[in-house]
Image (cartoon, rainbow, N blue to C red):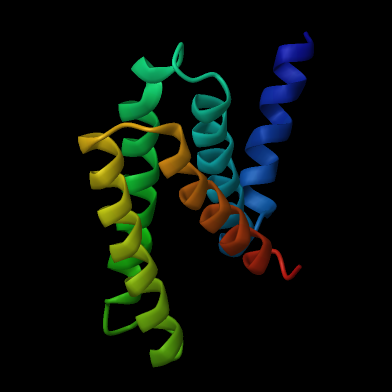
Amino acid sequence: MYQTGANAYQQTARVVETSRERESALLMRAAASIQKVTDEWPASSDQLEPVLNFNRKLWTVFMTSVTKEDSPLPDDVRQNIANLGIFVMNQTREVLLEPEPSKLEVLVRLNRQIAAGLRGM
């Protein structure tokens, strides 16, 4: 019974939330997942690749959307997001080549800061 109520709430929340809120929530989810891997290292090392793949896919969507000609964002914001996305891709590659939890901190911090900006904080 409780599960049904929770599912109904989640479906309603998806309809009501703005795209900025959804992007912020996804960035926070990615940051939390990366932080968990960091906190539980080395026992969590098997989760590194799936967590980083989720984050990479998220940033790929951001980079793709800002490079479209119909993007409503100003050019400087579009360029900044694209540059951050390139940084995320490079950092992800570095972590996968030489896994160290300290290399993950920058990804966590970046996702949290962008999420906070999207929420207007």
